Length: 445
Image (tube, rainbow, N blue to C red; front, top):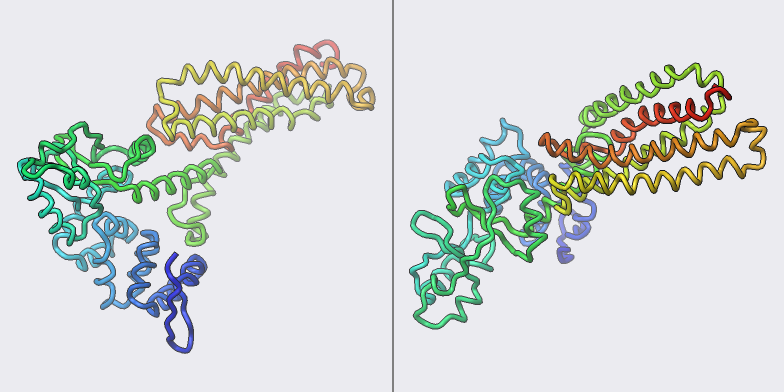
């Protein structure tokens, strides 16, 4: 949180922390007005805490003469994020505000996909040559420290072709004996990421190792830049938000909720909602197919919500667990058979548990004869066996669907809870009425 430094302007007192707290409810014009009243130091501190979307809106809301100084404050990777928020017809004007070196760096970053490591990296990092002495390297690092370098925790050792040879920490440099060469103190057991690696893979690498930064190389091993921990924190937040929205049965939003227009919201939610509605229409078709059975044993309709909701709930549980396990790397695509065997056991046991509860619900009910008729025992068997089948199928479908989507190179998060529930609803009816025909044929059917 920024320090509460107050400035007096137009007889109003503006506090940095108050502006931060109210930022999400202010219009762009109000944000710009409050921002311009802050002292330069406080304004810069606030500026660096904003998302790329907010930075873009703030910069474009400022007078033309002030935009250049604020955009040039950003390192190349953050400037590239701002450019990605801008419509195509505005990017040229914003790029013209950058200095020549940064413009080239940003252009190179924009050539990568937004979700690639190359799109996340900062091309500015500390580099040294392997044939430098330790003292020469330290002197050179002091010079580079005056520039806008992303991190000064490590120096990366590259040859004349910019191929990454090793990495050396500042501690190792200062602790090394005088006259030693950089190649003598550098570490060569490197962990790197390719510039084409997906950002989720990069985030898992940070989770597995206590890194401050990871070098990014191309297919030939040439150093391209570094991805830092602060970039990954943003990635994790974005991925978690996107997955959570997809699990709600909709497309992920491209902006904060309050910044999404009504037409955009309808587009994001209407498509999936319509698809789910069409899927639920199959449930009505299935019920129409078993209309004769329902007419002869109307008591069966009492348990339809119970049956299909249990299958949907078990499927949603399974899909949630597997999608998350795939996202964090706990489960790999090759583990699908192990997961299926596990869910086969777990789904069966859960189905038996719910089946016993459902059976007892019928058998111990005080007015069971009046409510369910004289064949309440057979009806309890029907409900119990149906629950076992439906819960088992829901668990298998919910756990396998994310694997199928990953195999098809689609986002497993698309196996949302509403989607799985819709899939299981139709199957649940079929299982239910199949069990009813087995136990009640010749009695009620």
